[in-house]
Image (cartoon, rainbow, N blue to C red):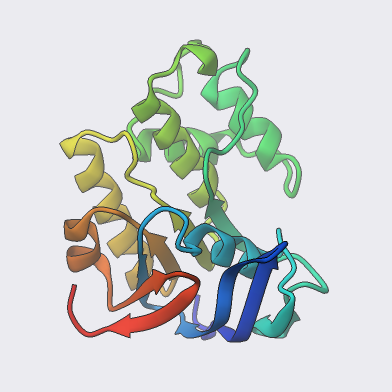
Length: 215
């Protein structure tokens, strides 16, 4: 991860009907940093993340990531958790990750096993995902986001449902990814997550984004 990656969000607006969700939002991020986005439910955080990923197209403004123009193409080389990631409920965590991994790569079962162990899941377990607790599902969501070692992580409430041990493990993992040069965008309701992890903090309120000096 030697090459610096930059996300440039410039004057982006998005509305659904008459409801303005993003109002002239600008944000500049680069690799080796963690950026925290805070705000109440419905403030626009998730929509902003979806626009950066290319899952939604902005009505105006521009989003570029390196040489990519988002909107014309989907974000590449990124691990993403937005809302509730969908998994195949009737199979194991290992098999879910195998199927996802094969979309872009030849199957690497060793890598998948290492990733499951890293997030605290047993790669040997035959337990079906439908029988997972909320915390176990969240660990699996984190595993799918990081298993290909992407240069960008976009994480919407990644600590949701985790116990204290799990929260510490994820924080440690994110700090290690940052040291490796990863660019991380993080939305969290947990003030301590933001204080411990983030280099810069932004608050969203009624579709507007402003930098906070303290949080």
